[in-house]
Amino acid sequence: MNERGRRLALLFLAALIALPVVLRGHGPPLLRGPSVASPRFYGHSGKVRIQLSGVPGRSGIYQLPPDASVETVIIMAVGHVPSKLQGNAILGRRLGDGDSVAVKNIDGEHAEITVKNISVKERLVLGIPLDPAAMTEVEWELLPGIGPTLAKRIMEYRQHNGGFRGWQELEKVPGIGPGTLKKLHHFFRGA
Image (cartoon, rainbow, N blue to C red):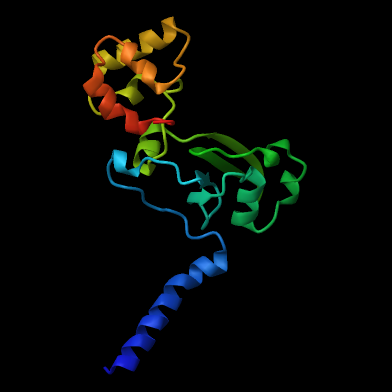
């Protein structure tokens, strides 16, 4: 194949790859995150990652602008706000990094929406910062250097002190020293 033929083939391949992104306008859903929780994936890109479920062919993980609302996600996924959902106050809710938007179908029509946080396990895979005030004992055990005993101490500390004001407060938990804190800081917002 001559040079001109190779360039034409590469141009065609690039156009073929870009076509779904251009047609959808929002980019493809991120179907897979990194295979393990790793600090290199943590950081702030200025975008929010949300999980959408209940919309056949459109469910998945999406990266959106920070001002995205539930209505933005519904219009992106369905093309319009279904009549049964119009006027619903939840449509105006702004989404945060790690929110999950679930659409429930009733009589074959999108009719109910719920928003909650995705699990810590999914946050770890996607590189979404964790909230130490919302994690369960079992979820703490997923982090490096935290076993059942330390997870229990973290929960006891949180309960006795009214929560955490920041991830740095973990250092006050008996058994968490500078080394463990250094391993953990990449997993939390503001780190």
